[in-house]
Length: 185
Image 1 (tube, rainbow, N blue to C red):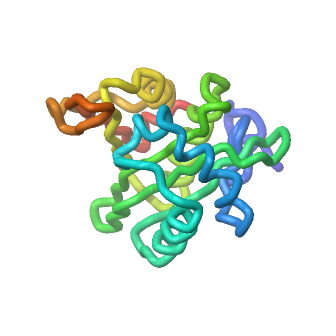
Image 2: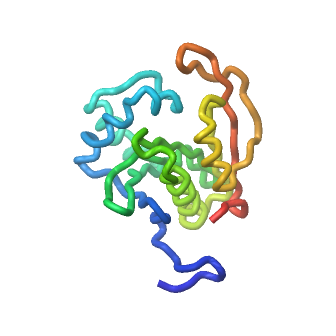
C-alpha cells in the first residue's frame, strides 16, 4: 500500500488503527447480544429494554433490507473479536448526509475502540459514500461518548432539553455534527 501525503500508510476503507468494520456473520448474534443487553450499554442508546437473541437476529435482518443504512460489526484488529456495532443511517444522497449510531460492549470501554470505530466509519462515509455531513445524538449522561466524538472532530450544534427518558429520568440530548473537512484522522 502506498503513502498518502503526510498521513502515513493508507489503510483499507473499513480498517482503523485498532478496529475493523465488517459485515454481520451468523455467529455474531450469540457473541454480541449479551454485550448489547448490558444496562450500562443500553443507557447510552435509544433502546428501551433488552432484547432476546432472536430479536438481535431479526434487527440485523431488518437493517439489511434498508437501502439508506450501512450497518457494520466492530471487531478488534488484535484478535478479530466482535466488540460492538455501528451504522450510518438515514443516508440522504441528495443532501449527502447521514446519522451515525454506535455501541461498544462494556468490557471494551476506555480502550480507544469506540473512537477508532467512529473515525473509521466517518472516513468511509466521506470517502466512499460521498457524504459531506454526518450527525448524531448523544445523551448528556454519556460524557464518554461525547469525548470520543469530539476527538474525531464532531462539534456540538445544539441541545434538546429533556429529549429522552433514560434510567427513570428525563435527560438532555446533544446534537453533534461533523463535516467532511473536519474529520480528525
